Every structure is written in C-alpha cells, then in structure tokens.
Length: 168
Image (cartoon, rainbow, N blue to C red):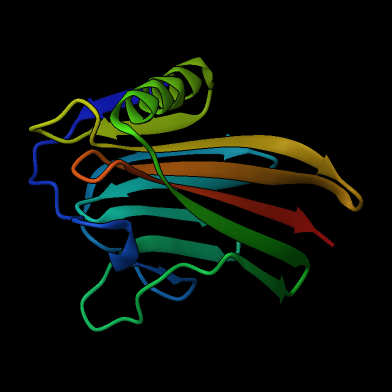
C-alpha cells in the first residue's frame, strides 16, 4: 500500500455533496500513484475533494465539484471503443462503533493490497480516502477492478464505489 498523511483541509462535508464524472480533466491532486496493471498505466489520484482514477479510456472523478449535479449514480455502464466500463456506488450511515470498525477494515484492505493509495486527512484518523485496484478476468479477457472508500467521521457515512473496466 502507498499511504499518505494529507496536508490539506478536509473539504467534503457530506456524502451527498459528491459528484460523478467521466469527462473531467486532472484536478489538483494531494497524492498520486501510477501502477501498471493489465497492460495499462493506472493513475490513482487523491484530491482535496475525493478521487480520480485514470485507466485507459476512463477518466473517473468522484468529488465535490462546484456547479456540478450532486449525487452519485447507483450504477453506470458505458460502452467505449474496445471497452466496457461499469460503476456503482453505495452510501451507508453507521453508528460510531460500526463506523470505526469499518474504517479499520478499509485501512486494512488498503494496507494488504499491492496496488493502492490511501490518504488520511488531518484532524481525524477516520477521515480517509482509499483506492485499491487489481486485475480481474472477465468474459472478454483481463480487465481492471478498482474500489474506493470515502469516509465522513462527522456524520458516520462511508461511500463505497466499485468500477470495472474490461476490453471487449
């Protein structure tokens, strides 16, 4: 795992402020890691407002963005030239004890993963953004799967996303 203590204010205040985009260019990153998987260079990027993952034809952004439509889709599928991309997101609100246990599991999962990037924001060891990416076999051959977690200790929310990119 590649873990960093982020030297920036925690900008997200609520999971409902997150937006989803597949067309945004780079935003200023607090941390970035490039890994090579499945023949692709994958850029894992932590922002002051969540994450970006750039893999092949996909430029995924989940972040608080001024002027964008708020909310994450439960699912999204895109057919791109030579590729299929699937995205999904869930938001859960947990009691304080459950929240702490879940954040510990997220940190453990990111620590155990060979290809990950995890950031902890100042002010709370439970204010975390983590990205884990791995290769998977799909019906058309090898692909990528990445998962992200965004934690909101002030209200006990955890946003989990999962994305899959497969060659067609």
